[in-house]
Length: 446
Ligand code: SAH
Ligand code: SF4
Ligand code: F3S
Image (cartoon, rainbow, N blue to C red; front, side):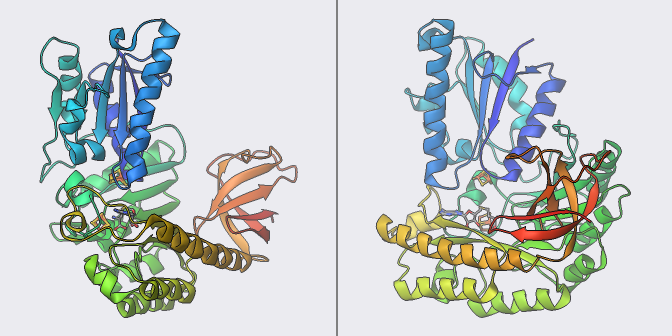
């Protein structure tokens, strides 16, 4: 039996796709290994969202090849291993990857071609030409495949794939194609099966998860249906787009206690001219009004966001608008990125990546400092409260004397042990929060 090693980069959708790939390969009678030096097939499920994402892949391929040749005492070119590239870099760089002699890749498959992997792999062991399938589909949702997940309490379900938004900086519409959704029944069936398998927390995934639409069902219907599945203690979703937050959806969120009161709401920029250049379809004012509306309907909501600094032609004053919006909204956490020009995107074709890296660095440092203070302040507001925390590990990474868990807000909680017995991963405990830092809450079971 051929043994496959798969490594995953990028977002949760890619993690989910790796679980799909494993299910497809297990069905085709492949085995798996966690040791890249012993595998017969090495596959990297790649990301293309920012520049360092693909530099990392090139480095990793060379590193694996070199260490395999050392270990097996053979020249790199004589190693019978097959290397495959999956995921977004595959559809972003396309055949350029196969033609790159330095990399010497054997097969590539884009995000909609994973059902063809058994064939592509077996072809790569033959004499013929290298195999690739980069076709993007309008229909493929893999709804007939039950992903092969690691044991645990957290599971992802991709409910829609692809993106129709074409934000001008973003490569995803090109790497993953058009939006398509699974049926509500099919998603609920998967959630039921997950509950039967002992999973407690489900995160519904999509590049624009709240644009979910299948026949008469929208995202509000889907969330409500999944929240009603017995045994599912927590439901989350990511990533939504600010354009799709109808009252109906916010009402569902407020109504179901097991829908976590947490929203990842990507801002990208706080300046109207830049938002327009990015094709985000909202203004600063509309974004701020949405935040107010959500806070009004769901007072205990926690927000995270994504921000890009140094987008084409962004001035200091325009950057300042982003700073002010972040200061005003007070997100619980923020992921801040330097703009990185990506092949195929509208920005790469029509705009100039003209902000020097040193200025991008200044801007990112400034926003990170601001956010660190805000995160600390927001976390300190939890001190003294009792929070429901789901235990994800019976030992925290730095100490055995604490449990590791997640609050409803998705904040990490380190729970000091007090001699409890019989606690298990997946239990929800009530924790008295005693201390906070920008990244974690600390406390003990009440
Ligand atoms: N569909 C998600 C985004 C997925 S990409 C959404 O709309 O929220 C995750 C984040 O990466 C984006 O929110 C954006 O902040 C960042 N990003 C995407 N393309 C980028 C680029 N070219 N340069 C820098 N950051 C980028
Ligand atoms: Fe990219 Fe925009 Fe689509 Fe998100 S909504 S995946 S940022 S194009
Ligand atoms: Fe990366 Fe593709 Fe996800 S580009 S962030 S792996 S959708």
